[in-house]
Image (cartoon, rainbow, N blue to C red; front, side, top):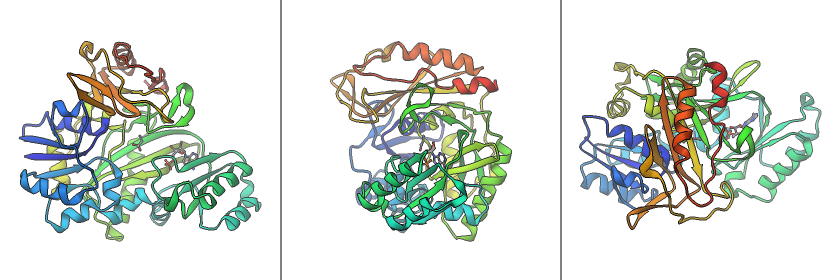
Length: 421
Ligand code: AMP
Ligand code: GLY
């Protein structure tokens, strides 16, 4: 089987790393890929929204399945484009992708199908939103303001006063800081609790959850500083009870996509908050998480190429997923200044001395025999051990061997998980 993976992050490196272990694979291509991926797959430097080029490339290279990593090509309709041309693709179509690309669509879907989520109201008018914030609504003081559309993870404001909430509403609806992605907003009740991520494979009829994981979204230790794409993760996250989560999230999700006639063949990712009242879904993503994939796949024993084919062919009901014992942790090494402004082109040292860990590349390129930084999140170092404590120690020993100018990483990844060992 020949496979094309679309994307350029640590997530795509982990997908390809796992596919390489399959006996069924002949060739793997990646558009556009990165420095590390170029060592294990053929990378083609093209725009991931150039569907015409990509589909022609797929036909020319006899690619059996295309796997879409990031959300943007999905929300722009790559799956619909491929379907018209009768090409196999792993990912939901444009309409279903609204579960990630429109927070309003996702919240209404959750409410309609009894998936627990924070209470919310929708607004497209600043004055009305302000009036709502000033009204004595359930005595709330804390709110979360969310731009409806995709905003590269920056469209959510967690506000601890009405004044902050009003400022956030103004930034989105009046100053239009997210352009059309912020034409509508959600004002949501602020919840408190630990967060966890649960991804599941779905072929439209059957849903198979992967193991739960926990991301660390803030840039600094102790969950301080601004939100990032994710600074590290570990799995399994024992804080989440999978069978309860499956019942109240994914069984209802499956009922919803059937009733709404949504064509969903791919991954559904639930961002969950564990509140004192139980599980609440903060968001859906319609793709693998990053860095969650870098901790889930090193523990996956089942052949990934087979699972992906089963999703595309609608045969997931024939499968059970097997997992290795132990824990996996991944620490993201980021460029100095990320998630704000950062520099690129810094030489990366120490990659040859890695021992008993996996380095997944994200923002790197290979040039003149060496690796240079080319993005905000540069590398994800993953390690597996029979205990979480052992995995933490293994990963940090390896992280210390890597170096590039400005390198930053969190030193407390997975510390939360030690309470549950
Ligand atoms: P989202 O993109 O909806 O997952 O939001 C990004 C982040 O904002 C989440 O990972 C949470 O940390 C935070 N967040 C989102 N919704 C809420 C909420 N209702 N209450 C508290 N925090 C939230
Ligand atoms: N790690 C969060 C995400 O993939 O959206």
